[in-house]
Length: 195
Image (spheres, rainbow, N blue to C red):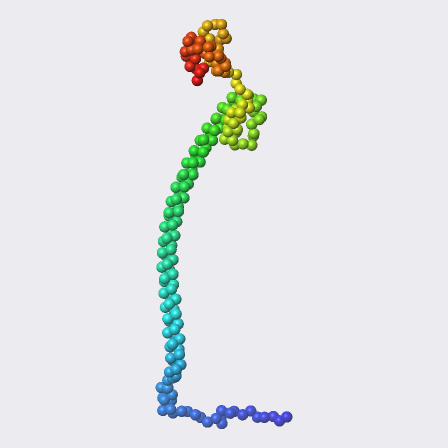
């Protein structure tokens, strides 16, 4: 292999120093864009600007519509909250009334239970509400489940030869002649028994 000597190539290069005159025309040279390219870019700009204007108009309309709806929603919310407060106050008053009525029903039930003999208390269903128990007791009494109370005589006979008192049932069974005797002797007793 042969060894090559290093050479400085700059020594062989020609000096190209352009004169000042040649530099000046290059500086004044502008970069020219063809008209068709300018028209194309300008048209794109106009299209994008139109789309942007349309988008902004739609956005503005949507915001106005949203504000109108929000106003309606606000109005609807206010009316609904007003109705809710009215219903809530009505509910509270009805709830208070229900508590009062429950107390009354319970006291009526207690009164009815006191009038029923102890041996019949087991017959009353335990799974009923107080209103249901009261209704059940009323129906049972109407059918005579708890037995009839002995009839108390309303008045006394005045002539002494009969028993001291007559019940309505006895008065109903009396013949007409005996009823007239009671009428003539004790008109008040006759009116009480004939009712």
